[in-house]
Image (cartoon, rainbow, N blue to C red; front, side):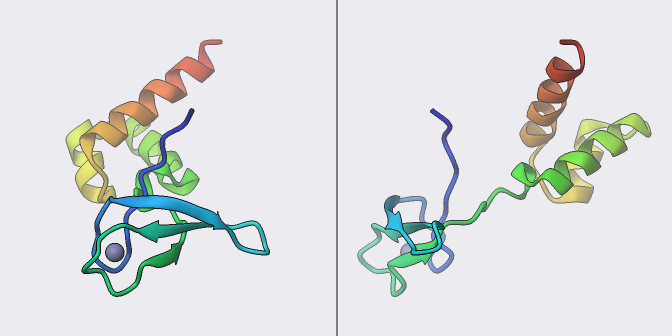
Amino acid sequence: MAVVAVQCPECESQEVVRYGRQANGKQRYRCNNVDCGRRIFLGRYHNTGRLPEVKRQIVDMTLNGSGIRDTARVLGVSPTTVMTTLKKKHRRSTR
Ligand SMILES: [Zn+2]
C-alpha cells in the first residue's frame, strides 16, 4: 500500500485522515488538528518530489553532473527524494 504524504494546507499538520471523495472522484481529507480552522480539504501532493515534472528534472540534472545535494537544493526537494527518485529510475531502466 502506497503511503501518500498529505499535509493540511491550513495548519500544515500531518494528522489528516481520508474523508471520502468528491463527486468528481477527487480524494478529500479531514484535518485532525482541533485548532485548525479548515478541517476539510482536497487531497494534493504536498511533496513536490512526487510530481512527474520534478522527477524528470531530478534525472536531467543528475545526467548533467549535478550532485544529489545540489539537485535537491535547486528543485526545493529533500536529498532523500532525489535519491529515491534516482533509485526508482535505475530499477526501471535495468529491467
Ligand atoms: Zn489543519
